[in-house]
Amino acid sequence: MKTHGYQMEGVVVSDRAHKTVIIENTYTTFLKKYERSLRNTSRIPAYNPECINARVGDTVQIAGTRRLSKTKSFVVTKIISKAQS
Image (cartoon, rainbow, N blue to C red):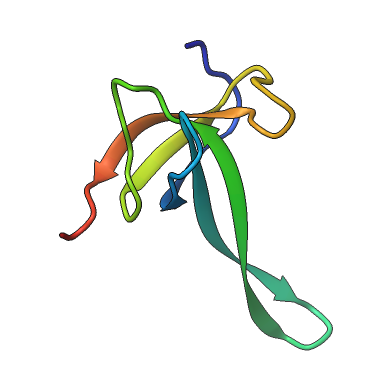
């Protein structure tokens, strides 16, 4: 599948939907007014190809692609590390 644009890493937190995984990405933002860092998380639905087959707990790399459904516009490109069993 062709990819373009944004790439990021995250942890798979759900794989219940068919050929779809939910990736959770943690990031920090700095609040200038309070001079503090704030930790945020984003949950991104991504297409999970059968050849990759990511599972809950895996750290994966995802990349942007064309719109695949109402919510999916990312695809899992590789598994960086498997979940601890």
